[in-house]
Structure formats: structure tokens, C-alpha cells
Image (tube, rainbow, N blue to C red; front, top):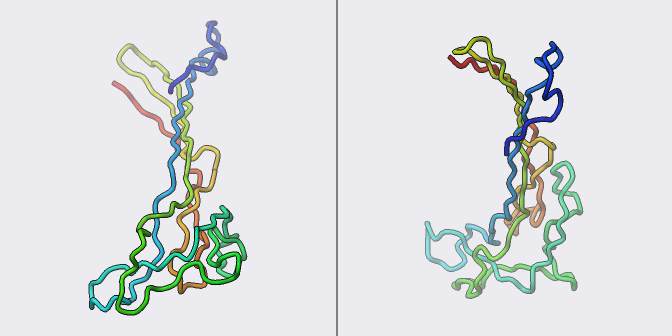
Length: 180
């Protein structure tokens, strides 16, 4: 949505020519989290190479805590979801040898959502009737908000159930366009 800034809208002085006529533009998006499954490439079913992911058996409802590991450390105690039940047993176990998990667990869970806001500040400077310049300052992820990646879904990993990575660093650019 482009909006003109209300400062220095009227007048003829140098300050009005330099400081007036600026516009701001912003766009944002909010997205739900990506689905994920719990499993490994280990061939529990005995189908041989190329059997794909073998999904593990869920032993109870997934308890999402929405916590994120600090500094990407696997030893951090913050879990996005708990890998053990409240009784201390494993939340997920491999299917028995020679079988495939009968539960519907493929893409049953969702990772954290993400959002961003991008913005631009710009002004056109007319030199002649045919020539004009546009000065633009653009920011991507204006508020510098981290978006967390999906949790580790490998049950044999020390980081299982943790989110140890993020994306979303602010990027900026300054541009001068010449229209003729």
C-alpha cells in the first residue's frame, strides 16, 4: 500500500522541494507453519533400499511448548515439542520390525508460523518534462524479526524436538532510478 507522507505538501521553497513529496510503501505477509513428520530413513519394514521415510509411532498427543533453543545448542533445554511424555517415556518409538506404522502421522504436526513486513521510502525528482529520478530506500524484514525454522524431526538426534535455526535478517538497499 503506497501512501504519500503529509509533510511539506504545500509551498515553493527549497525545503518543500527536498522534504516534500515523499511516499512510503509497505507490504507484509503472515504464514502458518510448514507440516512435518517424525521418522528416519531406517528400513524397519524390511522393504529394502529406496523405502523412503519410516514414520515412528506416536505414543500420545504432541505437546508443543513453542520454545526455541538459544544459540542453536543441542544441549539447550528449550524444546519446540516435548520428545517425552509427562511420565518420562518416549513420545515416539520406531515401528516394530517388519511393519509399517499404521497411524496417520505423515505431516500431522506443524512448525512455527512466520511473518515479515517490507517497506520503502521514495521520492521522484523531476528534472525536465521528459527526465526524472526516483530515489528509493527499501527494507526487507523492516522490524528485524526472526522467523524460526522447523524443529528437528529425527528421533535419534540429540536436538530432536528443538528448533536451532532461524531466518529473517533485515536487508536494505538504496537505489536511484532515471526515467526518460
